[in-house]
Amino acid sequence: IYAGPHCHAPTCLSMDLYIVETGELLCHVETVLGVTGVLYDEVGFLAIPPCLWGREEGLVEPKLLSADTTLMSIKRNNNTLPHTGEMALWQMRGALIPKKKKTFDKPSIASRMELLVDPSY
Image (cartoon, rainbow, N blue to C red; front, side, top):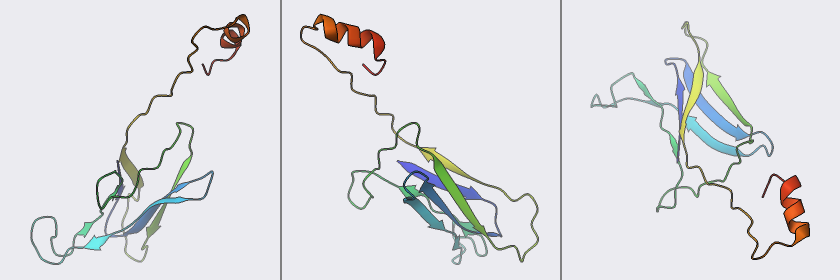
C-alpha cells in the first residue's frame, strides 16, 4: 500500500497525511536533497520518498480505512524562494476489501423482514 506525496521543488519541505476523525498521522515525508550526482540523486534536486505499508518485513502494518474516512494533507513550504504554481497532492494505491455479507442458514420470517428494511445485509 502506497502514499506518495507530490509537491513542487524548490520550495517543498515536507508533507503530512492525517485521519481527520482521529487526528492520527498516517504519513510524514520530508524532501531529500540529492548529493551524489547519480540517477535519482542528482545534485541540487529534491526527492520525495513515499510511505509504504504491508505485511512484509520492514513495512508498517496496513491501516484499514473505510470509504468515508476523511484525510487531511498538510504541506510545509519554504516561501523565501520565488516559485509560482505552488501545489501539492497525494498519489495513493490501496486494496479494496469487500464487506462481509451476513448469512442465515434458514431465515425466519422476522429475519427476512429485517433483510427488507436493513440495506447493510
